[in-house]
Image (tube, rainbow, N blue to C red; front, side, top):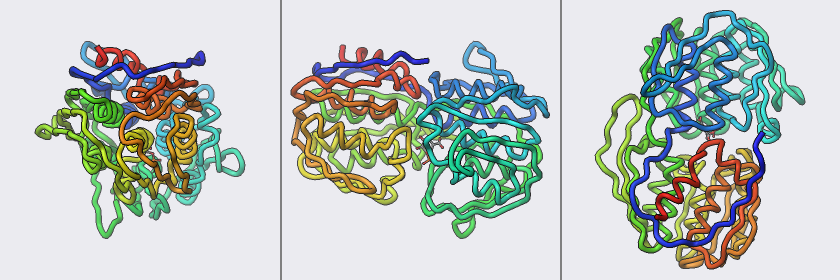
Length: 429
Ligand code: S3P
């Protein structure tokens, strides 16, 4: 159980130096989950060490996989078939853990209960439960399957086709995992992050794309895959915004994941006038990486909607902070999904910015931010509401703020970035 933490942070000058951000959260979850059902052991290097990933690690151990520390990473040895978890699996705050695990377990012949903290039990699960049931899964949940806890019993699945009404990598990945033995086709209104597709291909699966339909052919066995987890672009986003808004900053961020389905934050900042240099893209495994160099710049308001909003969805809270420092208006739209994340991130960001003296209009699917053309007034208290990305976005806001900002619920950063404060100190010198 986490002890509540309050941070009071004030502007402390430029950010300088080099920062290696932690491993990508999405890739870390998948490296553990997918290798836990492969035919042999694999090594994962650069795994994110955070509460969300620890929840996934505990879950795969609960159905018999082993994860051991080795010299340069962790070794995942797959689960023997037929080991049902002894008790409920607690996914904590992690939507990726619960939704991907549900897909992995429904056709496995195992019995399992998946649950999580208050936030996770309030997040929509009908989006996975309905299609899983349509393919024959025996899955129950609170309020008829709308919410966790989810109870899974053995069932025989059939091949199926599902048209997603919202773009979601968690839903897509859940369905790919569920349909791995029987075949499955999914279509999304826009392309969400594709880490699952890349990793499954590297494990020998055949995935094809035709007329917008992604088809996974039945695969009886997945080969183990060694994974080198790239630096998390979602973690880098905090530093990209911080160094952009604090005058005199220059920060190097080596080895950041540059998968196009994730780099909307870089494109959004460039559209706002940021000074970001991207190094040569390398692909040491199935994910591309590159070095980033960011210097402070005068930012201008921009329109962040459509495909760009999806490619920067998790980064919109900190992009809103960039917008608060910019000249002119920024309109964030097509981001209604933000309301069903770890918190309602639209109302949290709007409340937080207003508490810091920034003028913001709230919309059902986003917000309009009236930029302060430099430092924001600050001086307010922001409730992170148990949401790591809200806590870190407002920690960044404090770095170019006239008065200190108080952040309650800051312990939530442990979900994705336990070293955040330490890293902040290291670049503030
Ligand atoms: C994730 C997908 C996204 C993202 C989340 C991680 C993943 O959620 O917001 O932080 O690892 O698949 P949705 O796919 O539900 O939008």
